[in-house]
Amino acid sequence: MTKVNNEFIKASKSFEIAIWVVVSRPTSVEKIQEVIRNKLDIPDNRWRNRTEDEKAVEIFNVLKAKRFVMLLDDVWERLDLQKSGGSFS
Image 1 (cartoon, rainbow, N blue to C red):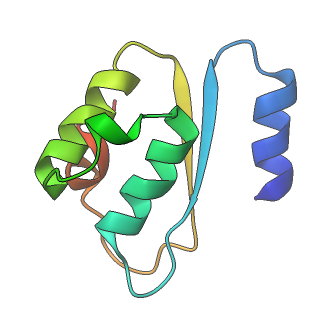
Image 2 (cartoon, one colour; image 1 turned 30 degrees about the vertical axis):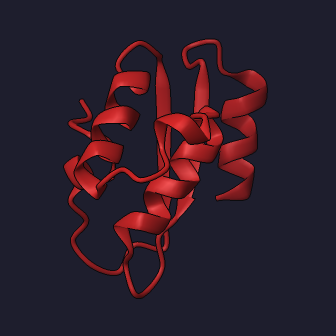
C-alpha cells in the first residue's frame, strides 16, 4: 500500500490529494477522521469541540472541492464512509 500511495502522490495528475488511512482493528471513526483531518490541514478552530457528525461534514466540505483518492488499508469490518467524512463517489 505504501508503494501505491507514493505512486499516486508522484505520478498522478488526476488527483490533487492522496489520503492513505490504515483502519485496523478495532475500527474507530474518530481515528479515521483525525488522519483525514491532518492530511487536509483542517485547523483546530474548525475541529475542536465538534461532534463526530460535525467533523464528517467538515471533511466532506473540504473534499467536495478537490479531486482526491482515498486508500483504505487493513479494513476488517464494514466501514460507514459517511461517518468518516461524507458521501464519496
